[in-house]
Image (cartoon, rainbow, N blue to C red):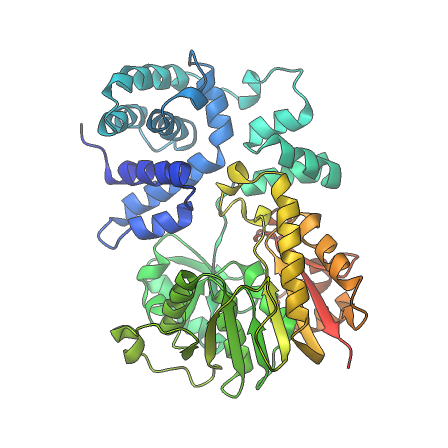
Length: 480
């Protein structure tokens, strides 16, 4: 029996995620070439992200039918079992026979035919459980963090720290939000074209609605955005609404000199270039040159002029694009921002969207929950302190800097800002009232700017409360 394209792609992606510490979204983007049928692409994506979200719960159920734990099985066997059980338990439209038989064929394809009877037997036994409530299989005496961790497929240590900070009800809401596929949000690079773009996307077969956080964002489902004309001609990009909101906190005006210190993948850079206008300048810095190359491709699609500090060979596509006349040129710079920055002139606007644990993006990047370790939070904190100190050294008098992460952990947000500000008397944390004035004109009808800030003057979004990634941002200003 041949293995379907969707399951073959899902298996290969999951194997690389586990064996190479690769990221599922990047692998899926590469694997789902235009020749892959939309239905196969959708099923492959559903299986990959679903298995990664529910991996702990799936393993708990599978262990009930195994003589040794799934962690002790060969990786291809474990992946085939997870793929099969995920379909049995979560995808009602997939016939049970297809889910079981193709999982058996996957281990044969992996040259582990000796494991085929095991996969067949375990999945057939597990199929009898799929209509039973999950709670039925949990021992009553389990501690609450472990119980929630198994029920909602998160590691115990994350559940424990969220219970301590948020309480049980809010933690359960967050866990549930992390296990739902996030909305596909679109950034509109020319807001005057939003109605026309919406109609074009609908005519391409997508279901489209206006943004729930920002008035100039769209939400889409039911098709491939990257195959539409608005995407190909650079009018839209895929970007979470919270991520789109962060650059707005800078209040960039025409002619500003802007530094985007940790710029990849480039969505925020594009927004800053549009806000700075043709008389402004945006410097986009990134540690890794391969990420700068990816940014160059993005900016070329968006028709934003690029000047490099390192030599990159332009593609024919780059040369064919006419640069946008309303956007600032972007200078791409490869540098290590943990070291003193090399710029002679100061910037009046700086964005530090720092590398972080990513705990606000566990719905979008579910593999993070299985890789992250508690000690890494301290490591991220130390890195972020260096980045923020160096960035502030380049901030002009009267200038504004936004420090942001897609982490919801205090070590990476409030603790970083507090440590840096404790030694810099010339820098202050802007009040939420000031930041609200900047955001209010961009928000969707009915959205309160006040609801996006906490009592400590930090911008904050939540997967549970806002249906976006979890972002935290601080607006810092240098005295005149």
